Every structure is written in structure tokens, then in C-alpha cells.
Image 1 (tube, rainbow, N blue to C red):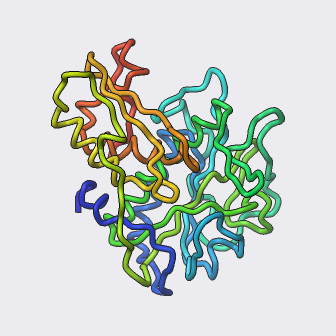
Image 2 (image 1 turned 90 degrees about the vertical axis):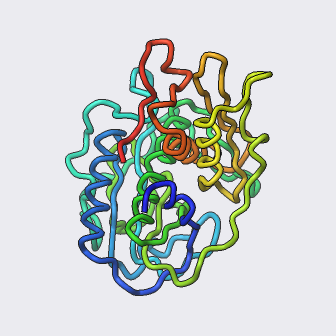
Length: 299
């Protein structure tokens, strides 16, 4: 199964069976996590075979059952002077991508919150979710979306089902299986395993609402293929809060629009777009001036 087929196959599955994930598949996922951490500077970690990988924490949206395996998408806000975009942000500070695969993390490991003055990635206010406004948080969320979706599609290629989830109060969980280094937080998690029921119907906005091209220009085949892939990307409540723009010089820009967790959804959509369009065809607007190709992850 190639990545485009995995995009078609992927659905948000929230109910899982007790069938364990084969160790060989876990090893492949662990290697992919290592690669993502090395490229992105994130601190993604995985747990498998737990009674409850969500530790009894409530999920922000959706009801989950039988979650025995999960990937915690962890990082710290990108600060001034740090690399932006999706690619490697210098040498990864973490020695291992998966400090713990089962059980709980060492309770002596320090758990820290975001440094003073940094805005939360999202917060509840009168039952409404407000999008990030801090540039460092925005960059973190987009990176989590990009690399999290890369991992989700890899899991689908391996015959598993997945779903994105937000765990309420995850940073304050007692005896977690993940560890947080100073300044880090869990942005999202990925549940994975053998699904207990098939996925639901997928819906999408029309392509014309999700992209713009210069007046009088016919949409290039590679751009259309990228958009068709982006339209398959997961976003909160299927809101698709993103907009891709093809410019006259052939570069592409992408921005988050109004919607829940829009910057995470944008990261997912950008990964899909690169795969669908072919990375050799995509020059992101913010890197074109220096003649650099868009930073992307290898499959």
C-alpha cells in the first residue's frame, strides 16, 4: 500500500479490539518515530500493550474504547532563532524517541510546563476552543500535524487503524508512560491498533473553497493532485481549516483559516499535499527566495 492508498484507507477509528499489535510492526513504527524526532526536533513517544493508553483521561472530542496503544506527540514551542518549517531543527536534543514502550515513566523525571510568557497551544473559554496566537505555538502545532500524520499513514500502511485525539490535562497526568522534558507539552496523541468497527463516511469541501490559483491560469496537474491529497487529511470535526495558494512564480503557500485546532490540521494537510503533488514539484513560498526546496520528511 503506497501513501496515496493509505490516505484513502485512513479513517478516524475510536474503538479498538484487544488483539495485540505484532512486535515487528511496533519495531517499524518505533524506527519511524526515531526518524521523525531526528528531523523535526519533536519528542514523540510510543506505548503499546497497556490496559488503557489514555490513562483514564478524558478526550477533548470523541469517545474512545479499547485504546491499548498510542503515540504521544510531544514538543516545545519554537522560539526565535530556531528553525521553522517542517524539516530538522538542528540536532535532536533527545537521546531516544521512545523512552518507554510499556508501563509508566520514571517518576523522578522532571515534568515541566511551557515557559512563562508562552501562550497555550489552545485553551477552553466558555466551552469554545481558541486557536494559538503565539508564533512559537503555531509552529509547534503545524509540526505536530505534519509528522503526526506521517506516522498515522505509516501505521495504516502496516494494516492498523488510527485516530487523532486530545487528552484533557495530559501534562498533569499521574504516572504517565511518557516523559516531558523542561518546556515540553503533549499537543495531541495518536491512538492505533486493530479497529473494532469500520470507519465512517468521509466528507470534504469543494476544492475551489480550499485553494486559489492566479486568474486565467489553468490548475496544473501536480497542484490538483496535491489538493486532492490534502482534502483527505484529517482535521477537527472535518472542518478543513486551510487554504493553499499557487502563485504566478510556481511557489505554493498554505495558511490556516478559522477552525478548531487549525494549525495542526494545516500540518496534516501540508504533508498530504507534498505526497500528492510530488515533493519535487513543491516549492513553498517562504523558502523560494533563498532557492531552497521545501523541507519535507522522507517516506
